[in-house]
Image (cartoon, rainbow, N blue to C red; front, side, top):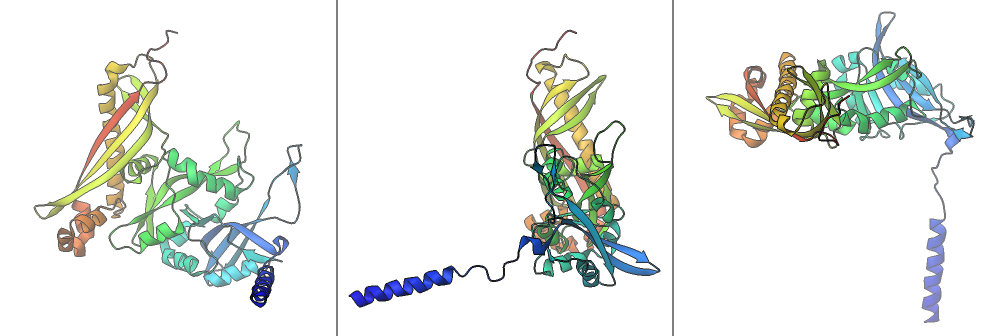
Length: 391
């Protein structure tokens, strides 16, 4: 019995030693070049078309303090490399780093307009195949070169990457300016045959007169429209909001919608929005209906006399305003011949036999399809006070 106990103790001791061996492949922080944002472009240099990769990298060489209270903050440097191939451009950047490139902390990929129009499948395929890439990283597109976006500075965050992540995760969706899109979500969309895709658009915001902030910062607003696997155009502010309200289903919206009724301009503050699609064939032609439900409050107006008796008329005006926004988004989608709403997908899923009849000529059917918009808007309250103030 004692021999068995000794044997178990000896085995336990050996196992403990194995667990204390540590991380054999660990790297010191000082030996890492931590990329936080990556941008891809196609550029022409001396008549040659080249790939250009640019990245923001955390500067871990020094401890910096600011604000007079010893508060530490991070600093990022900006590098770029060019090459004939994607890997060549990446190597041209990496070879200048005195540390191992570490992209596991990358929060976003920004795809320049030319890449989005010409090489979108190549760049997404290369990103997903790269061993250290993250499928949960946010993806954006922009007009012109993506390198310009990385040249901006943060306004209220320590680093540009943190500011971009916060806006993408929360602010853009809540304000109705755009929606979050990860590399995995976007890749799933562009490989499907029954739906076109959108990419959140990131823009350069120029400092306005009197503002005390960075001269150039970023804003995430709008979408790039992707037909098949190529960027074909952009959605404006109104079209973007119409798209989000119809199919975006934002989780916690805080969207102010300006509406005009006769001489009264009021703001309908949307706090809930849900959209769905119904579909079918009518006399051999597809017909779709977008059903939208919204809830919100009215606590701002150009006159202080909006009360409960105004509710029915206001709700009707709100519904007409939302219908107008959605119709503009549908019209733009038809202009680009891009089914970003998922009409074809809905028909495929719920009416497979009807879908088989029109699938080969779907693009033609989509442009001629009858699309109706039905909106049910509810005004939940008129603010904290039921009466106005006689100024």
